[in-house]
Image 1 (tube, one colour):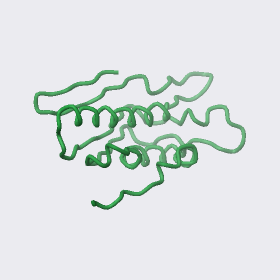
Image 2 (cartoon, rainbow, N blue to C red):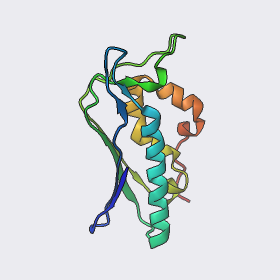
Image 3 (cartoon, one colour):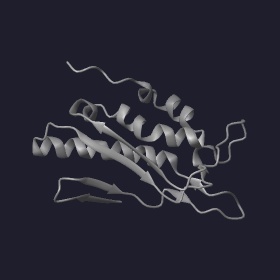
Image 4 (spheres, rainbow, N blue to C red):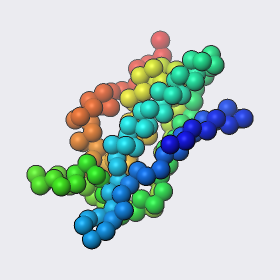
Amino acid sequence: MEIHIGIDASVSMIITRVSTPGDERGPARLLDGVVLANSWRFLTWVRALSDMTGYLGTWDVGLRGSMLRGRTSLTFAGYTNGASSRAYDEDSYEQSTTAAPRDLAQPALSVRQLNEPLLRGLNSWGYWLALLPELGGTRSPHV
């Protein structure tokens, strides 16, 4: 994992090894829980950076993955209860959102906005929503 802070005030986190190679034992898997957890972690770090610098504006945050075609969710690896993952049908995934200070204080909605399309594509969104019900919340209006 790498964190980059650019001279233009951009902040990025690079994570590698979020998938397993496919072989004769099974298909290539995407570690969707790792992607979800690190999205949450990144937003927490952005909040800390915002607090340390006194920046009260909004942040544009994004998630991008590459070499995803054919990967399935590790969440369902070995399940025999009928739950299964779909193979992701795109080479890459990109999603972005804007996070205001209130979103950084409670990042579940921003995490959802970044991850839901990918996890729906893998058929694991329902699993993660049941495990982390805060992902189902809605954005509160400005006060």
